[in-house]
Image (cartoon, rainbow, N blue to C red; front, side, top):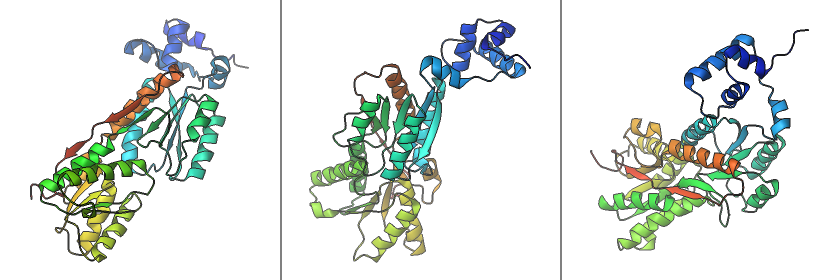
Length: 335
């Protein structure tokens, strides 16, 4: 029987200490890139495989972080996940991903799986309807966690997201500058607090412009291209069209334009999307959008979660990044 390789064997062959080899393996500590490459090459040559189960028993750490999202196919959440995963990898963590489909029951099952897998921490985009009491369970589990993109009312939890009140205001102010006097907020599900905050920002800007509350209308649609398509058709079937439309996401805006093109009415509305995903600039017309910088937001959430894992009793931190208006043509500019 071949004698089992140890990390000490790898270290000896690579000409480094066992402690240095361990730092390379865990992706932590200050190790030069030359030394890291040499140790990793030696591991491959010798066929060394890290026994993570044994390490977990020794340290009570798995070096795995749970990431629970509502819709992995949502391009904005894809950007958030990219930034989050890169930051976690940099800190030596692998990720265990679950997609809840924005369903609270599926979310509960996913969270139970994360608990059974003994993840070191959790990044959660909460499903619509998630009760704030869930955070009490996290406290009982002593599970370091960060909420991302969506927060919970009355929740005492660390959170990283965009300032959606400001985002709604920026979108409305731009449409008002174009002379819009009626605005429709298209899409999003009732109960999503980011939707509520954006509408609050839109309403505040319109009130400051002297417009009545009735000048702002809204409708609930799935956050997807199909939701935007259905919402766009409903708008076109209504008694009158608004001057401008603020969409809950860029995907909804793209679906809206499909409905407008099908009706031969692509130029009748001023439209602003939200999130500024990569495809927004490639759409026709190119979408004016509220940029929330998903990749940067995800990276910030990753850094905060790593801090939480290292200091579980640290103070609650809330980070709301200021969004930006990215002007293209769908709002009527440059046309």
